[in-house]
Length: 68
Image 1: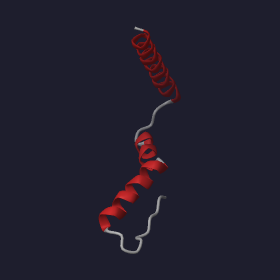
Image 2 (image 1 turned 90 degrees about the vertical axis):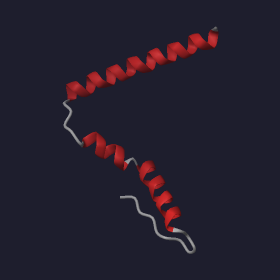
Image 3 (image 1 turned 30 degrees about the horizontal axis):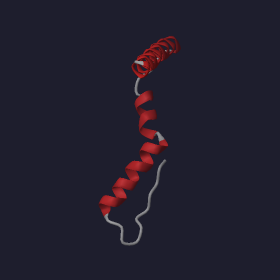
Image 4 (image 1 turned 90 degrees about the horizontal axis):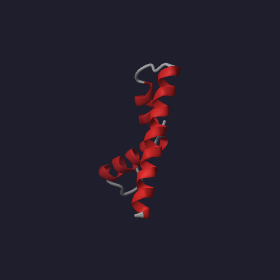
């Protein structure tokens, strides 16, 4: 669990900003979102394949733009 302590002379806003940064870097929220619903192994595999196809198409588009 991410933890931050108030430094001497630090404002509440700055502390909150630092806390948000620590939470995002730790990946706690993304893990919670991921585990919110059960996803079967088969569905997970299908989603990963779709992501891979999207990445491949995006790279291909960028390369075509670069070479033109």
